[in-house]
Amino acid sequence: MKIKKGIKQIFEIRGMGATLTAFVGLIVIYVAFGILNPKVFSGQNVLNLLRSMSKYLLIGIGQSYVMITGNIDLSIGSVVAMSAMLTATLMTLGVSPLAAMLISLICGLLIGVVNGVLVGKFRLPPFIATLGTMFVARGIGYMVNGNRNTDNIGIKLGKDVADKFQNFFYYDKTLGVYNTFWISLVIFIVFFVLLSRTRTGRHIYAIGSNVDAARLSGVNVISTTIKTYLVSAFCSVVVGFILCAQAGMGNMEAGNTYEMYGVAAGVIGGVSPLGGSGLLLGTFAGAAVWQTLENGLNMIGAQVGIQRIVIGVIVVFAVLADAVLRNRKQ
Image: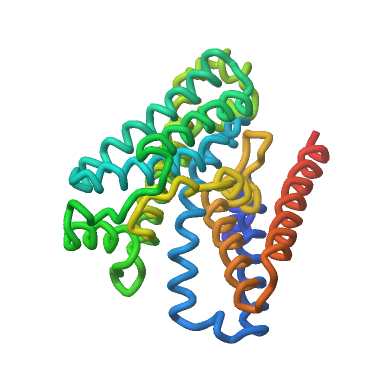
C-alpha cells in the first residue's frame, strides 16, 4: 500500500507524467538507434552525446524558466553569439580568460534585465520584446570584432593559457566524463533546486498559471519575471563560453536558432509553452531526447532535412498533447 501510495504521489506532481514519458521515450529511441547501428552504444559515442547534450540542456533550462511564466525568450541564440564573440575578442586582445568571461557575463545579464523589465514592468509581448533584444545582442556580436570572426584566442594570451580555457570548458575530462557535461549538470542542479524548493520557484509557477491572481496574492511579478530572464541570459552566456572553447575562436553566427532548441528541449520534456507547468527534470530528458535523435540519425546516415522533420514533428506532437490535456482538465 505504501509503495502504491508513493507511486501515486509521484505521478500527482505537476508535470511528472510528461517527464517520465520523455525518459521512457529516450530509452526507446536510444535502444532503437543502437540496434540499427551498434556504434551508438560505444563508450566514446556516449561521452560525445553527453557533451553535445550539455548545450541543449543549458539553453533548455533558461527557456524553461521563461516558458513556465507563460513567456518566451527569442534572444537566447544571440546572447550565445554575443558571449562567444565578446569573450574571444577580449582574449585575442590579451585580456585574461577570467576577466573576459566576467565582462561577457555582465553584458549578457544586462540583456536579461532589459528583457525582464520590458516584459514584466512594461508588459510588452515577450515575442516582441525579446525579438528586439535578439537583434541588439546579435548586432553587438557582429560589432565587437569589426563584423568578422575572431582570430585564435591564443594569439596574444599564448597557447598554454588558451589551452587551459578550452580544456576546462570542452576538451578535458573529470571522472572519465567531459567537463562540459559536469558544468551543465551543476548548473542544472542549482536551478532545479531554485525552481522546485524555493519561494521564487513557487512564484514562477504562480505567474504562469494566472499572472493576475499571482499579483493579487502578493507575488512581485516584475522581479520574478526579471529573475527568469536572468537565468536564461546566464545559461546562454555559459553556452557562449563552451562554443568559444570548442572552436578556439569567436564565430558571429554562433547560437543560430538556439532559442528554438531551448523551446524544443523544454516542450519535449513536458514544460508547457502556455505556462504554469513543467519540471526541469523533464527539460533534462527533453535535451537528452533531442541530442539522442540528432546523434542517432547522424549515425544511421539520415539526411539533415530528415533530422529536422523528425524533431519538428516530435515538438509539434508534444505541444499538441499539452493542449489536449489542458482542454480535458478544463
